[in-house]
Length: 345
Ligand SMILES: NC(=O)c1ccc[n+]([C@@H]2O[C@H](COP(=O)([O-])OP(=O)(O)OC[C@H]3O[C@@H](n4cnc5c(N)ncnc54)[C@H](OP(=O)(O)O)[C@@H]3O)[C@@H](O)[C@H]2O)c1
Image: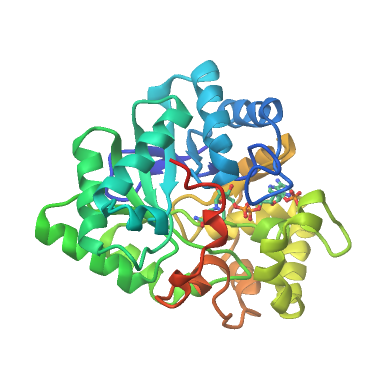
């Protein structure tokens, strides 16, 4: 495993982050394909053995059970100080706004609930999961800064935002003396590269870590056509993100397969080796032991400039999908898919 600093923070992280969205009670939240506690624990243990020290979860994942599974596994298998734990909070719910709960109070309530779920007294990275158009940015940044001051989180990160939103937030933080975002978790992989328009440049200039989610496009960059899985069949949210462009994306996936054959490695290793040339640490989803084993191997693979170009040459710009397609004031009026069952605090 290789380790690196998370942007301007003091956190030393493994270059593979374990995504914990696939851990949690099936049916208790958005996904039907998640794995139970015993199975999650085995995967976390394997990750730790392979040198993974960076774990990403969220209060929104399976009604908080992802946080609970991760927290209990870390308590039993690892030393708290040896791992870097990231979790995320959701926008303020309508009921909170009606009850007069401020943005600052909302963040404190959500973080307290996450810490309870995790059984921890601090997290290393607290992530603003998606832009909250109904809460002033000042309140978000002050609330996050208070969380850092209280010692409940060491650093803050952001997810699912435009580059201008991140730049605006960190400029406000600088002016007010608040904590700044040290990392951004955007949707970025070989078949969805819109982060390269502006975000990558901003992150390079400001030393903000890119820790992208869905680095394997939910498994599409790991398997040849015809191969399937429970998740591929049941993850309807991923179908909404990837089905419309499957024809064009298939060319890129075929290039991944060709390079995998050339090296005698898995497609996962090729896809992640490419992304590792662009970002600090991809957040890789694992629901099987072999998933995390395969992901970790990618860190050792170096592709040539020609091979990187071969993987990139067929990409055409994509429309925004998933959470980013809903990053508008108008969409913020609707109840977001992630809000279901996760806001009971
Ligand atoms: N901030 C956000 O809004 C946001 C959104 C989504 C995800 N996330 C975070 O990002 C993490 C990853 O997201 P994701 O699960 O969509 O991403 P992903 O890493 O692109 O997809 C994971 C899937 O890829 C396949 N896979 C992984 N390793 C493999 C291997 N070695 N060999 C073969 N197949 C392999 C598996 O598919 P099969 O199960 O089909 O075999 C697995 O379920 C989540 O756990 C979560 O922490 C954040």
